[in-house]
Every structure is written in C-alpha cells, then in structure tokens.
Length: 79
Ligand SMILES: CC(C)(COP(=O)(O)OP(=O)(O)OC[C@H]1O[C@@H](n2cnc3c(N)ncnc32)[C@H](O)[C@@H]1OP(=O)(O)O)[C@@H](O)C(=O)NCCC(=O)NCCS
Image (cartoon, rainbow, N blue to C red):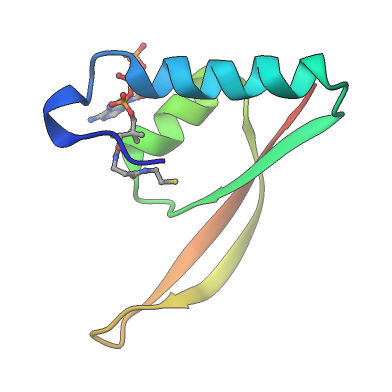
C-alpha cells in the first residue's frame, strides 16, 4: 500500500485498510496478516490503530542495495 505523498495523513490509508477488513469479513476469511518494516512508524501506527498486533519478527530479513540488513515484523488481525 502506498499513498501519494500529498495525501498522507488524511485518512486514505485508514479507509483502504478498513475496506480490506470489510472485504475479508464479507468472505468469512478468519484472519488478515501483513509484514512491515519496524521503523515505519506511520504504517505500524495505522495497522495498530485498526487492531493488528505484532506476531513475530524476522531479524535481518531484508537486504538493502547499500548492504544494510533490516528486520521485518509480521502483524495479524483475527477477524
Ligand atoms: C503508511 C501509509 C500507508 C499511511 O497512510 P495514510 O493515508 O497517511 O494514513 P492515515 O491518514 O489513514 O493515518 C492512519 C494512522 O496511521 C498512523 N500515522 C499516519 N501517519 C503517521 C505518521 N507520520 N507518524 C505516526 N503515525 C502515523 C496514525 O496512527 C494514524 O491514525 P490517526 O490519524 O488516528 O492518528 C502512508 O504513510 C504511506 O503510503 N507511506 C509510504 C508507503 C508505506 O510505508 N506503505 C506501507 C508499507 S507496509
């Protein structure tokens, strides 16, 4: 998910994730999961606000072009 920079902070991300939750509930899915970089405060804040909780962490999971190794966290929302 990527909101155009000028539109961030105006509720678009909330609306999109809420729509995904409603879409999943309507199809009787039992759970939504996602992965996010732990330092991405905006994204982690959005997902926490909508009920996702951290379920696990993958240390040094992502290798960046500059060689840095970044952790990744998994978050889940039972429906
Ligand atoms: C993360 C992203 C999708 C959020 O979308 P958005 O439309 O800006 O989010 P919203 O306006 O709906 O904000 C929802 C919540 O996110 C959190 N949030 C948003 N921007 C934040 C920021 N700069 N710092 C901390 N929390 C923030 C808050 O909890 C906010 O709830 P609140 O407004 O009730 O406080 C958007 O910033 C984005 O596209 N970022 C770049 C791409 C990216 O990181 N995608 C996610 C990859 S996992």
